[in-house]
Image (tube, rainbow, N blue to C red; front, side, top):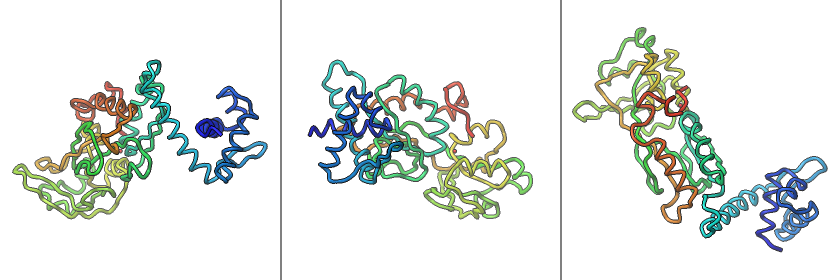
Amino acid sequence: MDRLRAFEVFVTVVSRGGFGRAAEAISTSPANVTRYVNELEAHLGTRLLNRTSRTLSLTEGGETLYARCKSILDDVAETEGLVSSAAVEPRGRLRINAPVSFGIQYLAPLWPRFTQTYPGIELDVALIDRVVDIVDEGYDLAIRISRAGPTSHAARKLATSQNILCASPAYLDRVGRPTVPADLITHRCIGYTYAATGDEWQLIDGGGKTHAVRVDCHMHTNNGDTARAAALAGQGIIWQPTFLIGNDLRAGTLVQVLPDYRLPEIDILAMYPSRRHLSARVRVMIDFLVGAFGGVPPWDRGDANEAGIAPATR
């Protein structure tokens, strides 16, 4: 049995949703497709597909094999491309992880342009706010928003975003404005679940001294859009990055609190497992993102629409 060919047939059956459609896609007969799948199941000693006259579904073993075979075939296609003068474009599946709000607002508008430029690359984008393990969860690239920067993985900086403490004018008119960091203790605050320092907010004065205040958060959320919505509704004070609340500050629907103090900046990073053996598809994606966010980022220019990036709603 030609195992690589069997992998290709199996992956095509799954992706096309049937033996007949797979046969058309790879220019062979349905009987030949069936033979390859049967031989693969016999070789592995397990059933890969649940088949009825109307439905086709993967078994648990089939799901595992499909993911691995897809990755293997992507690598084979890219390897062939590296040595073939006829195939100059990067090819294969590119698995990307990014935070939900940033991914929707600033990355999603970029994908059509990328796929037009590199039609041989299949994007598989997962938006998750928790910090994923790139290697264990099988990602080629992760967009990370971080104060600490990378540790065990290679990374390239795409941009910087300021963190701003803010609230709605209605809330501040009703409760009053804090004048020093310690005043935050008496205010209603909205906390971000994944914040590195939890409910201890750290503000830096003009002299560089850090003031740590443990605030009273009457609400926590793992998504910046939710925190922003609560602040816009007058529910309290938040700290969020300018890529999320920059338009609100410009429109006056949110107002900066304690403007004489600043919060630590955060970096927007493209992280990947290793600089060694960096695939062509990861390399072109990183270069593409660096180009898209180079210079002053759109959230600080105030021209998100002109940059082809959707306005905020994190």
